[in-house]
Amino acid sequence: MHVCAPLAVRLHHWVFLRMSLLLRLLCLVLTSPRRSRLHVLDTCVTPFRVWLNDLDVLFHMNNGRYLTILDLARVDLMMRSGLWKHLKAQRWYPVVTLETIRFHRSLELGNRYNVETRVIGWDEKHIFIEQGFVRGETQVALAVVRARFLKRSGGVVTTAELIGLAGIEQPSPVLPEWVARWSEAEGGMAFPSSSSSDRENETVVEQ
Image (cartoon, one colour):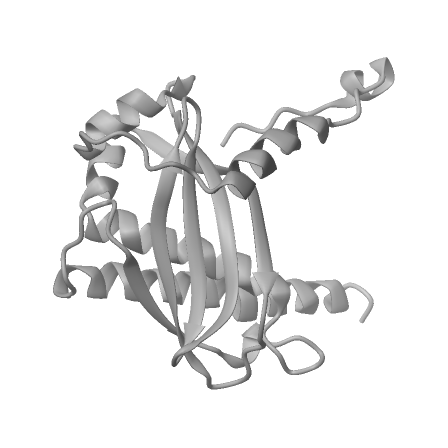
C-alpha cells in the first residue's frame, strides 16, 4: 500500500498535468498549418480553454499554469511565422531567462480565452516578448518574457544571428522604459556561490 501510493501520485501527475501539455502542444502542431501565416513581428493570437486540471484549490486557473500556456503560445508564433523550421534546421532552441506576469482577473473552468503574443524588442543578448491573456474584451493577465537562443552543439546564438535567420531587417523597436530597467535589475539577483562540498556533489544534466 505504501509502495503503490507514491506510484499513484506520479501517475496522476503524468496523466493530468503532463498529458494536458502534450495534448495542447499536439493541437497546436495539427492546427498550425490551417491557420493564418504570420510574420515573426506580428501579433499571434492563440485560443485556449480552461480545463479541469488547470484549476487550483479555489477553482481558478492555477498561477503556474499561466506560465505553461505562455510557452505554448510562443511555440505557436514560431510555427506560424515559419521560424520554427529554421530553428530546427540550425539545431537552435529558445530558453527563458527572465519573466514576469501581472494578474488583473481570474479564469475559471470552461472559460475561453486568447493569448496575444508579440515581440516588443531585442538587445545584444535577448529577445523581449509581451504576452497578454484576453477573455472577450477583458485583459486577464499580462506577461513579459526575456528569452535567448542556444545551440545544441554548444554556445549562444547571437541576436544578430537570430534576426538574420528570421529575416528581420529593421532595428529593434524602443523597449518600454520599465522593461529595460527590469532586465537590467535582474543582474542584482545573483545566485549564491556554491561551497566546495556542494560543487563536489553537483551532477551535470545534459539536455
